[in-house]
Structure formats: structure tokens, C-alpha cells
View 1: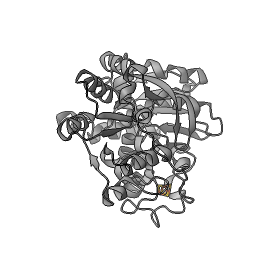
View 2 (view 1 turned 30 degrees about the horizontal axis):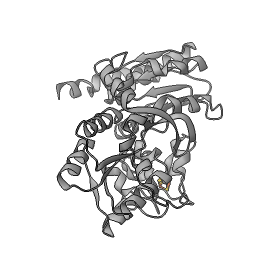
View 3 (view 1 turned 90 degrees about the horizontal axis):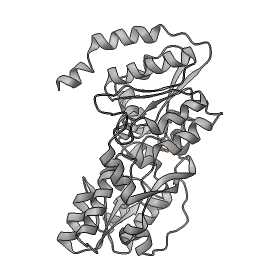
Length: 357
Ligand code: SF4
């Protein structure tokens, strides 16, 4: 609590605010945050309103539920309809797929459970004897615990547990974003939680494009000081990666977590909502763990995916529009009645804009 107070201290915030006010850019400067928790905190504390003229914060694909494509959700729905027990993190259950959601399938009698960790799914499989499939989504942050659970299932020789692999990797998405000249990102606010696992090195390639990045924590002082560091580099024409979250992120990341990911998973091409297919941007199970791969083990017919015609979640995730520019925002689409995933998840941009403005 002391630590939180220190990083919300108004006198420190005011000093940083003065620094922000000292910047003057002739041309527009775009800073992209690629972490749903940053998006939420920026809106919660009104940080986007403190920025100097010509500096714009845009949200990128930082919400794991939001970037999960409809075809994955449709697949999970068909597995539930086929009688498998589906376990998932909370937000996922309400995300609309092409034709339905896991919540609706549960109301129709499907066996769908919300769990707090993948290990809960494994325990459910042991306890119930049912065929349990865990929806493995998230970035590098959730991959180590999912990997550890798969390892445990192998150790226990569990035959009724598997995962629907859907984890995504942040650096390949950053490559697509930094190469998109139309988007014109001048600096990245890099995700604190992901960086705890991967460290600094995997981001270094973005500096080759002349674009700096700062790894940031989640309190107002963390975020504002990271923006100041980014603007200083942009002003000087420097491009470096700075770790501004040293109390949690080691430069080399977490080697134990990295080892688990490498042992259980391998990079695969993956489709992201809004960004499309990207090379090596997902994690699939290695051959040695294929007995836990629900996609390989169980065949179900999945209908062709479709997007809600009015939902602009894909454009929101790419930073092309701000949520209020979507014609459905706040009218047809609200947190109580979400049309797209960006309004469902507590880390979604539409949800952040709706809640905090
Ligand atoms: S406001 Fe709703 S419909 Fe519009 S982009 Fe966001 S999630 Fe999609």
C-alpha cells in the first residue's frame, strides 16, 4: 500500500505534469500503449488529458480477450456444444463470437466454467473425470502458468485434460505496428506484465525503425514518467528501450518462466483481431505435448467466422480510431450489452472509454 501511495503521490504527479507542459512539438506525436491495464489506468486517472499539444496517446492490441479472433471463440463454442467441459478466464465467457457466446451456450445447458487459473481446470478434470478443455489465451504473461499446468498434466498422465492453444506474443505484433507507416507511431509505452516475463531484449528491434520504447508500471507516476522519457527521446531524435519499471522487470526477464514457455510451446503463425495473420505471433503446443492439444484431439465443425457488421473493434485495436468514433459506442454497444470484445473485457479500450470517458 505504501508503494502504491508513493506512485500516486500528487506532488510527484505535479512535477511530472510540469515537465509534460514544457514540451512543444510542431508535428503530431503518436504514442501507442499496448497493454490493456495501461489503457484502463490512463483513462481512470485522466492521464490522456495532461498531454501537451500535438501529443496523442493511442491504444494498441493490448487486451488479450479483445485480440482473440472470432474463429477461436466459435471453436470453443462448438466444443462446448459437443459436450466437452470448457474452462476459461472470466472475461472470455461474455465475448460474442460470430453467432453466439460461451455465456449463451452455458444458458442452453453447456458445461462452461470460469476459473481463476489453469491449475483449477486440471483439478476439475481430476475431480470430475470429465473431458476438460482449458481456453489458453493471453500474452506471454499467462503462458508460463499454462505451460506449467500442461507439464503437470503430463506428469500425472492425465488423459482427460487438454488446452485450446491461443496464446499470443507481443513482439511480432509490435513489428507489424512499427512497420505501418500510415499509423506512424513515434513511441511505444511497453507492457509491464509481459516485460516481467520477457525482459527488454525482445523489444530492441523497434529502435532500428527509429522508434523508442519505455517499459512502464501501472501507477500514475509510472505512466506519466514513462511518457516523459518517451517524449524526451522523441524530442532528441533518440531511439532506445528504457526499463522504467525496474521494481518488477529485470532486464533479462524471468528465465524460469521463459524456460517453461520454450519447453512446452513453440511459435506458430496466429490470427489477431484487427491485425490479421502474423508470422510467429502465437504459441502452439510442441509435438511432445500434443496429447494435450484439444484442436488435434477433437474434431468439431466450426462455421465460417463473421464480424458484427457495425463493430469497429479491429480498428480500435490498431489505433486507427478511438472508441467513440464507432457508431455503436454507448448507444447499441455498452458494457451491459456488448457488441464486440473491446467493450466486454475490463482491459478493453471501448470499456475504458465508456467507464472513464
Ligand atoms: S464500441 Fe462496441 S461495437 Fe464499437 S468497436 Fe467497441 S466493441 Fe465494437
